[in-house]
Image 1 (cartoon, rainbow, N blue to C red):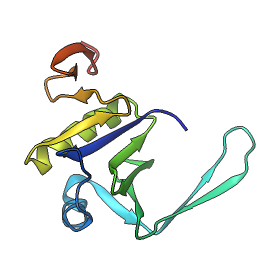
Image 2: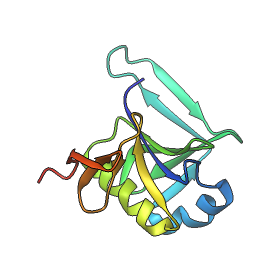
Image 3: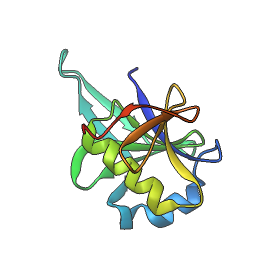
Image 4: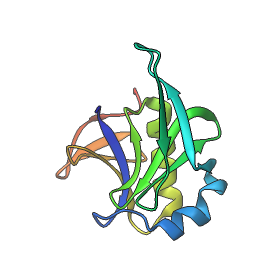
Length: 126
């Protein structure tokens, strides 16, 4: 499945209505479905938005999808640019929105990764 990073607020996801009203201004477009090709098998896979999980295409990187669900806003297997974008989204949404990894670590705007109040590394490559 791969490692995921999520934008959350207070341990919960971002309300769908809030994200829908902010997505375009943050560079994302809702997509009802997305067709991807498996790089190994070349099989086509169709991902579809539902009421419980919606897909958004990152306008700056059209093959990169952000998933909205009750779990949060999620990038699967994020690279450095995706992490930067998630941190930007967290800052823009404010009110305590943070980027959290699957293991509970927090990716902070200053480039550090925090786990239970202790800096454990950097995500920004510095």
